Image (cartoon, rainbow, N blue to C red; front, side, top):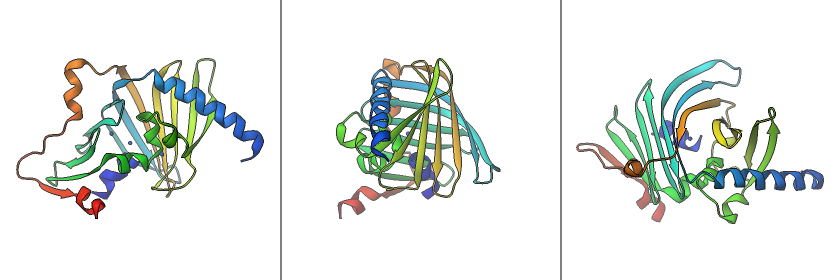
Length: 214
């Protein structure tokens, strides 16, 4: 299950002169994300190691909604599902017939991806943001945690005008996961149930909320 959690950690977290620029970049990113109350898209995934050697390719469906709702369904090559319902994070491995559930705040806050579903000052204060201009309409924002709390060391989110089109995740081993989004749209009113996870019959449940409580 560690690999499934790593997806989330990766997918459903200067000088004085640079600091002012980074603050402006963070403000611009926040403005772009504030226009995305929800997002539904298909994705293609390409993972390479530190030597740029291909490790994995995949595809699936990605969705998010503010606040703290996340849906990540990897359909190829092996199915897995990550769902955040606003309070709990569910990680389901159909092949192994097991589910892990944990507190969504702790799980999401450990990754720079938290900025996609959080708008509060406390969360944004944990990260540094730097903008890279790609062309006249496209730009990427590099996000790095000020303190490393997970195996994610960097995230970049890329926009074409106002539309989120790509994000990249780099882990502490140097592996780069690149996700390209297509068919972007808002989550429809009759689709919001994707953020609710129903535990299938006859699966093992690892409830880490109890462990965290102690």
